[in-house]
Length: 197
Image 1: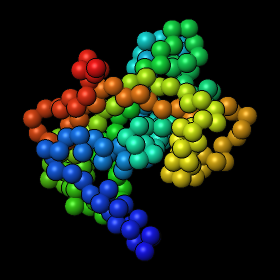
Image 2: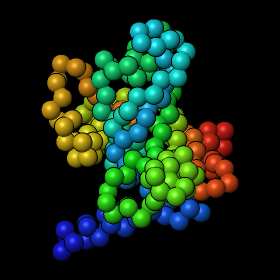
Image 3: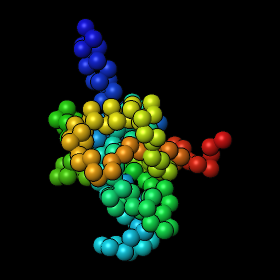
Image 4: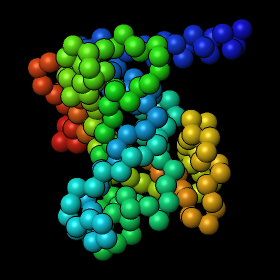
């Protein structure tokens, strides 16, 4: 019975909300997608120029909370931009596209599929979400770190095989801005840091 209940909950969680349900759509995308592009401002001059926008594919899990958690290494270019070099700032954006959903159950969502009538990841009904905020390293062995690692390793099993000598750690994005396009008529700003208490 517990397995059937879990599957029912998963099926409901995977169903896309209606386009007028903006916060629900943002939450659905963060809970459904496994990866996005983490964008930083480059602090490096190797294969980049200081000050350039730098996007890097990044796996994440939201641990059913809406908070994006990452498993990262200080050897990674994005983490160097955020934490290591002079001029580093912990600010980043995580960009998600509904077109990254490859589940065959979503075949009916033709507006994301290139080659169909109006289908393209840039077509407004193919939802795009940008979460922005500060990236924060989680305290080792804290309750939150344990919960984050459990969620990350469950969604991305290969993480458990990563080499220990590469200084991997769990981090989260403290989201303060949510930008969404999921229909015609422009972007919805669901949350912006200037509106926070």
